[in-house]
Length: 380
Image (cartoon, rainbow, N blue to C red; front, side):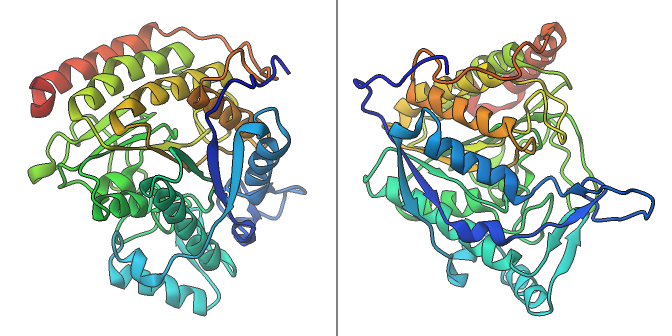
């Protein structure tokens, strides 16, 4: 451990968690396919498995950040709550699939026995975390949930996601009187479901920093390109930041300071949601970016600074992150940054990944130019 918590720090993070979410069993196969070709002795656990979350729970309970964590139990979402973001026909499809013992919703996304209950727990736990902040019981809440949610669109599952946990929480904030919500999604994949849910709204600013992967099929028709800006009143309020493969700590920090910070300063939200995936790390099997703990810590520090616009109100929602051990370290570093703890509480076991940010900076500058020319609220 590189340091120890300072007793003068008064910040805390309220973590919402429910063990029943571990019962979502995604199975084995060749990576996330669920396929057994018959000629391999050892198959992969599906990347979105319970081990990754068990390690996040344990590092928060037994790691050096534990004195700053307060634990709360989650709950199941009510079916009526789901309809604030999802279409009734889609919710019914999930219910019927569960009754019949499961369904392959799309490539890599398996609704198995136990999955629907875990999904309800993830959604309800996220809503409880948001409600806690909205009621002023705490400033910073972290919904430690699975299955993830940011790919789930109002009418379909996608990318391991069934219900859009963050989207439901954002809608709760709007329904509770918050006027503007800003979402910063740092998962390595485009937060297409959240974007789709608020694509015509000027009350939600969705910002997604992701690798430039494009569409991956019928369940994910959105490309995540810079020209997907929203529609109608929502035009200009969906900001995509597709970063080139290999973008690391300095590239992400430059993107945050060059693109994210100015947009939130202009938007002036009264609620901020950080959609936190650790699959942008240098060692994640499901991403091609190069963040290390230092990069996540810096992102956390920038988010803390931005939270001044929301009077400190911040909801963190867990998404991807598939390296079973390193994801926990990266989440720990993100929360260290959000709490502004210094020096680092824990050293990086895998530090030292090389980075050449020159190309990333060039791409980010071109995105900045495009946004300044095309987004009305950034010109004000």
